[in-house]
Length: 100
Length: 157
Image (cartoon, rainbow over the protein chains, first blue to last red):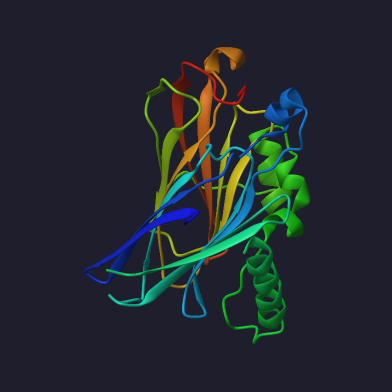
């Protein structure tokens, strides 16, 4: 079972990536109401090989089950894109997908 | 599974830390600039991140619906062709202002989409505004803004 849905497609030298992440993204306000600790994704990094192609520090205000899209150059079809996120609780998930 | 991933990530992070300075490295702006994420206004957040800057209003585009019916997932795009070191994205509806700070790799195309949570704009007089700042490689700063209305807030859960 994957945590992320990743689509990566190369066209004219530019790779377009679409990512859906399963995460509650519980804000401080929401968590307070529920009587639990806030927890949200704080960092998302994407790499091709050991080269970083996307690097985002994020706040509690990404939507629940956040969707991201980004673009980058310098990769080709068949290369493997690896996306990692880490949340406030320290949990981290890494998943990969071949660029089409 | 998760634990193993977490450990792997930690080892990887430690292994890449002492890497050559010229290589592009991940920056966790939540650690390097903790005050950015606590700032209650866009101006304060920008100050906490970049200091006292006077950004030029050009070259940065923020795209969002004029009226967002569901504040729980508002689609937003930040675009710029300016060769950038970092890009930061803020809004003035939620309790804190910062949403994302990107560290921009060499081969990036700044065309970043995400869905975000926003509180209803009637809580701040209907003045919903999204702001993106580009820190250019030329050392200058550029700003782009767009206004929007949010009908139903998405932060209350």
